[in-house]
Length: 145
Image 1 (cartoon, rainbow, N blue to C red):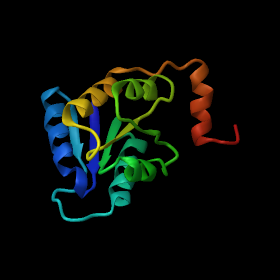
Image 2: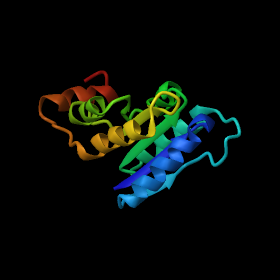
Image 3: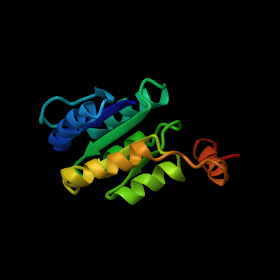
Image 4: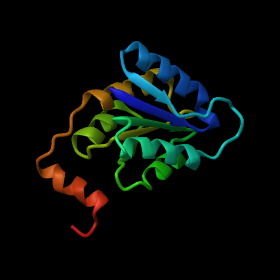
């Protein structure tokens, strides 16, 4: 699977760990930055991540910042992207099954590496159920439907 990752300065270490782990798992991974712990603005990287998921360059995205809140908000500004902020695997799976989430957000200061990997695994392995959920997902991009 083609996966893009982006973070702010607070999540550099978790991003690098997840990037290397995903590559080991056989995924094609694009690290959209940043590359250092120098302070950056999370919206810049959230917008970049949303863009590559929205245009199909990446099939899924993983957004990381200190809490996961700010970057998830910036990713969700793109109407073609559905980013779910999660802290455990069940929510990650439900974000895919019910909401067809194409991006996952995690808080690096709140989520340990093992839990982050469990969330990412659930996110990547769960399929969208469609059916009754489809019309609701459609309304996320088109509120007038």
